[in-house]
Length: 297
Length: 335
View 1: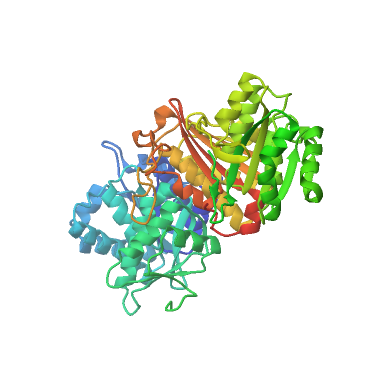
View 2: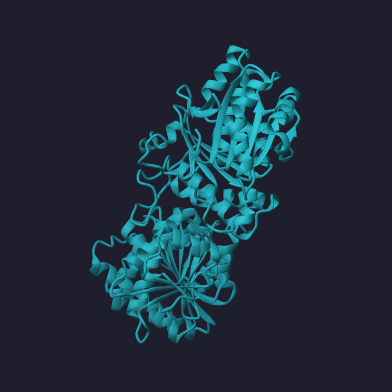
């Protein structure tokens, strides 16, 4: 079932929520465009200055990009003409920031400050799927640092960010790392993630079809918990919003916990009885505790 | 196929399906009397669906104990179809004790009809604690006698059950016709994993309508989902899921599959079928290798699951026993 915007109700609800930095995940480019267009439409309607970064086919100007076309965001063409919507293609972005993470943050900071100086109520940034090679750990670390830049900006200013990922088009390493880095803000077709009262909360339908990206998100959540300053390294997972989980995803969740380093544990909160039995049946390791078990905090 | 085993004291366990050849009512009663008496001594329920002369002979032989036997009309188990036959047998089974049923081959049924009913019993009643004694007159048609020999894992000879060397277990590529569970109440195409969400919604709706709720409904939906997922993967991982095994990954695989759900009294039956050309090579021996059972984990969430492999189709069937589900409510449905 889809809504008038072409999205599933769950996805639309998650894109509308208060989360400042999300990753829109789609199987196909068409699905990604539907989600991105809806998000941009809403940001424009709410009076935000929108900075949109993406790809332009050779010989095509920004005013012919799909986001301002008939299948793009409502009001985008007028917003592009008025300056409410600004578009930058990736080669230009790289040129302006000098190809460095620091330069990118400087560019984004200037954009936010300029938007607020112009009197816009808030700022929205969206980036199309980037086709990174994600060839090694250094590139993955650089990518993670760039993504943290959005969080730093959002901590200072009213900034909403939507990163976009088309799974069919990105390579596996890039898809994995992208889902891992955005582990607490994924908006996929039938599942999504958030952090609720300090607990990582996957929600919706968790099934084998999205198993790889779910696994990446779990891995990323475990990594974030280990790296969180001041907090314990245990990952607390709220399962109350999981509508469905199949054997593959139960297995993925437990395998991620089993392979966690430094004696890191996973504490599962508010798991329905069926889900508890499923996880036990799949083979819950000692590193995974339910919240009512001894030792769980 | 029979799941019957002998317990420590020689008592039957599981489903015991036995054929009995007889000349006369007295001959039949003499052949089955030791088992009937044993069942009554054990507190099992005993019922019959035999002709009047056999009932009279049984009453004479049992004496006062005959009062504890439910003597039904001979046509009770052969009213219209194999479906009604299997339904009647399932209704006679008990959860709290074992049941013994003595029936006669119907003179009104063809050998083909008898074959479907008897073969179906081996497949769909295997979860019951039930002893089924099927009596066939020695002067029955050759076709009917062949059904008796082919479809009963045991034959009663001189009052003693013995393994039947002529028994032909159900062939994995010749499943019992799904029609014995009635007409489909849900039929959906299965083109790939993108269809699973809709299938789960449809099955959940049916589960609610037949009285499955909460835990049992979740189990029924998950069983069908896992079966459909296996079908999408063309048979799934060669090792099957497990804590250290690869996860099923269907990718963008497209199959021209079909899912059908049927509701019979007491059971929810789902069949997922994909053309053999869609099946991965690893599934070719999916149900013939004792070491590999890709459907094993599906059985965690239902009461029976079977895989049938033929030259044209790969079929997975899932059976949820509605009466056991509502009473149980825990993931201990394995057998």
